[in-house]
Length: 74
Image 1 (cartoon, rainbow, N blue to C red):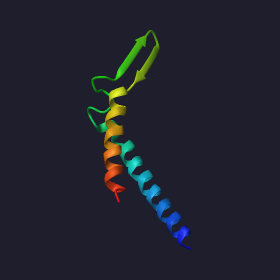
Image 2: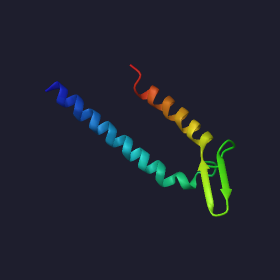
Image 3: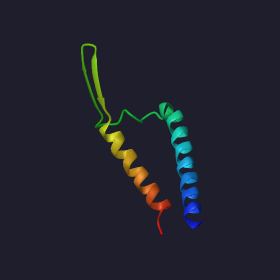
Image 4: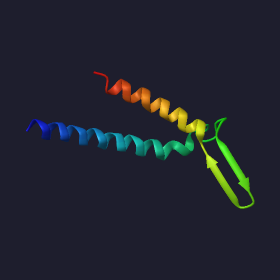
C-alpha cells in the first residue's frame, strides 16, 4: 500500500508541475525579454529562418535546476 501512496503523490506532483508549466507558457509571450536575449541565434535567408534560443534555454535550465533543487532537497 505504501508504494501506491508514493505513486499517487508523484502523480499529483507531476500534475501540479504540468499546470505551472501551462501557466508559464500562456504568459511566455508577455515576458518582454524571453526569446530575445543576447546569445539567441536567428539566421534568415530569403523565406528560410532558423531560430536557436541558446541563452534563453540556458537561463531557463538554470532557473528550473535551482527551483527543483530547492523543492526536492532532503
